[in-house]
Image 1 (cartoon, rainbow, N blue to C red):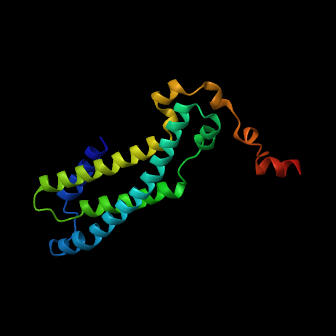
Image 2 (image 1 turned 120 degrees about the vertical axis):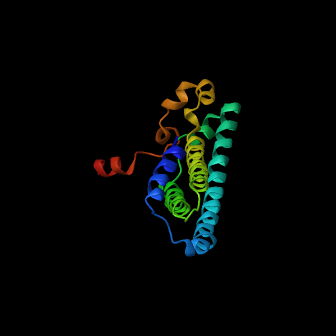
Image 3 (image 1 turned 60 degrees about the horizontal axis):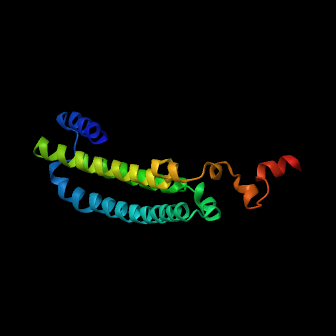
Length: 168
């Protein structure tokens, strides 16, 4: 769906002549798109590895019924900066691919559709792995009381900073 929307938007711009000059195509593809693509691949590999490692930990905790270890990972999410890094590189990469001076609409449409679909798929996979507790497999196997446990109380961390400041 998102690939189709991106392709439709690209076609509207392309048909109105919005693209880089034909003479600059080699520079745009060879330097800018390649640099963004390599940076994206490095970032996504780094982030996906971290997220998948956490996902595997949670799976093991559920299968072994290790409540304490499960609680260590239950509320952990990707830092916002990870989401920003993926988005900040994705949009310029897709934009540059869309602004190449394609000779044929089909070549441009396929390029934009495939790249936007892959960028979207990576985003959704990251989001799903980041919070595996929403999947049906986990919902069936995790004792409901594990979700009600207050992490601060369980690990004797005390109150949140805001609560401490209010008490003082």
